Length: 109
Image 1: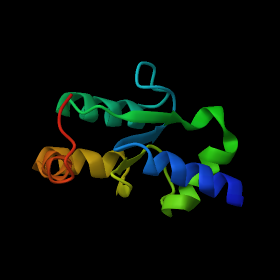
Image 2: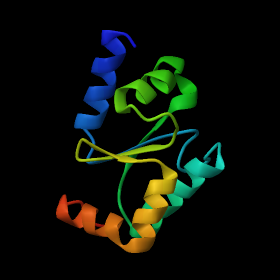
Image 3: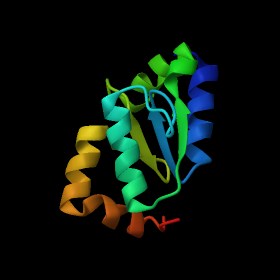
Image 4: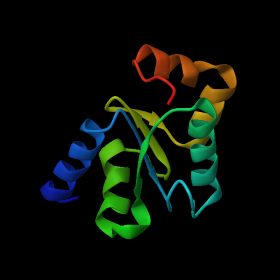
């Protein structure tokens, strides 16, 4: 990953309280895992920004290195990497995700 890509990813993570790197957009997810991640965040009523990794190969590969996580989607809350859709689902079902968002001061829209 180039320094420029690293800086771009850091800027995106730092400037959004809740950020989802995904395939497609929230209105048109391009894979089932991204769709699940969007559904979870929508169900929790949280405003979030998204980055369509299909639009930029450098971001698509770079985010995997940035987070040291091999799959997409990837969720960040207040700059902290949370995980992918499986982890989001586990945290959602246990109530941990709502609790984390609350603790981080991210309220429902």
